[in-house]
Amino acid sequence: MSVIFASSTCDLNLKILKKVGVEVLNLPVNFNGKKCLYNASKFNFDEYYANSNIALDEPNYTKLIKTKFTEALLTGQDLIYLTANAKYDLTYKFVNPILKELATKFPEQKIEIVNCNNYSLGYGLIVYEAGIVNSRGESITEVTKFVNKIKRQIKTYIIPSTNANIKQKLTLVGGMIGVRPVLEVVGGELKVLNNVRGKKNIINVLLEKAKQNSNEVPLAIMCGKNTDEANALEEYVLEADSERVILKGGINPLMLSQFGDRTIAISYYKKPRS
Image (cartoon, rainbow, N blue to C red; front, side, top):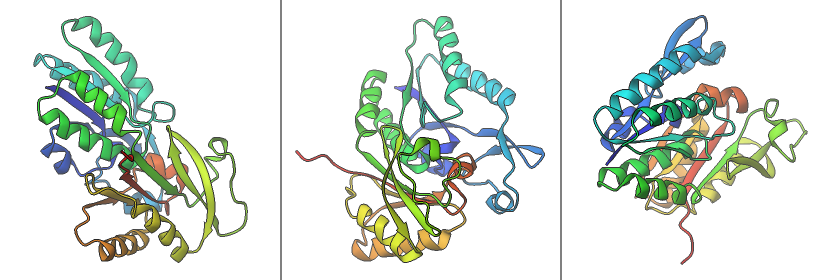
């Protein structure tokens, strides 16, 4: 069995991740002039919405990575770090060189970094399922193979409340007032599917996508300050299937700064046809 690490930007409650044996690196940030750790369960989102001045505390993050990874490797276990999105995730550029350095110090152990190509709870679902597989005692090779498979089957749809910071990532953006793009995460990139206007239509679009979820993996619903939309979507999903397991949570501030604080999104496992 390996030690699996993930960033707290997976946006899952730490108690849930602890149950499947995943170690979480709570992101150190400078927030409104003070230092704190981003923890999905404890972060003060109301304060963030009032003043969204936040940045990664790079020196403390580097120190945290080295300390936690070294402690894990000293136990004699292999190590896997699951990163959200190697191209856009700020944490990747710090983790990767440290893992290379540690690989020379612990040559007898296997060290892997795996790109999940996703965001927020889409990343979180992959981390959660990887933790379950790892807890069964699978080798680092098998866990890595599993992650690379399931990340292609986790579907994530995002409806941002602003496109000001993501235009360079899109091929098409609706410009009409009140129109919001429906984005699909494909291989870590954002693809515009269509545009939508109005709360009811936004919920309906995501509801239709959510109906494609396989019950083998929970459905993830995530949002910013628009918890009313997330709650309504959850109610509709449960009306259609009362047995559906749902993980619901807030989107991390690093993502909200890009997509807007009324962003709503879903992630689910779409089982491939046999």
